[in-house]
Image 1 (tube, chains in turn red, orange, green):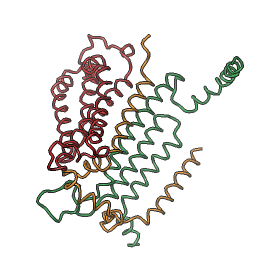
Image 2 (cartoon, rainbow over the protein chains, first blue to last red):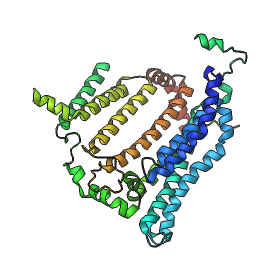
Image 3 (tube, rainbow over the protein chains, first blue to last red):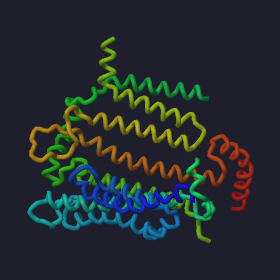
Image 4 (spheres, each protein chain N blue to C red):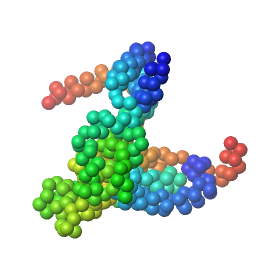
Length: 161
Length: 91
Length: 139
């Protein structure tokens, strides 16, 4: 626990901000086909929200919210969504990732392409966010090496500094 | 050693400045790269073929979808590699 | 004199990327600290990104997103943007793997200075070769 993690202001602001950052990440992922945005950017923003939570509330509480098994499952799920979309096109008689061949809205291949591009972006976003979170947890020190600050450390010590 | 490094870096920089004189000026629209028919096809065909307004997304997910699949695999592989390098075995 | 100024003004993006590339290249070659080498590699990569993105720019052009209801809009070149999106992701992945390798090196040798690591390896080398020779002899 460092001094900044003790601060009431930082903890409260982080608790308020994290849901909004996650909502913004979902907006960026879903807005990737209509404007600036996309799966990579939104995935990194989503990962940054969880990383911010883990930085302030501690690695152990961050791992409670995002366990390692869930992380691994999500990382491979996103890639499976992407490759599965490509195989779906193969199944309906097109080439790999030829979106227009899937008979979702049969009269307009462009509309089907737009829908499946969104699906692909969601897959990319899931993979990127899970990998970012697992990178942070892997690089951060294990819990035993984190030094504990004494609980009675008064606020005035860092007000002076 | 540092002098040698500085010399190599300055040599590389001088070569880049010399080669950069042939590059088009900033913001030029008459270059081969912009007038290339592939580029013009991407700009014209995005709305018709992909149905999305964002050209970069259409390029990334539709025209170059196979490349992006490999890219996602690269970042997944990096995550697995870091996991294998740093995660200690639970004994 | 005005000719030189015109050249510098028309192609200032290339000057900027050349300077950034030289900074990153120098850090990669001359610094002994491995983390500083990684930082140099990242500066180098940023220079390449800026080079590509500046090549894509068109004077008076908008972002490459279809503008509904406007016919004669000039769009900037979307191809380098797409290529650089790929390159940024690869850069993040290589940086992550490099940092993980540095952490492993630090756990093994207790240092991230290149000199110290090389000296430690040199002092350990005879034992390694002896061990390898015995291992080979047994098989």
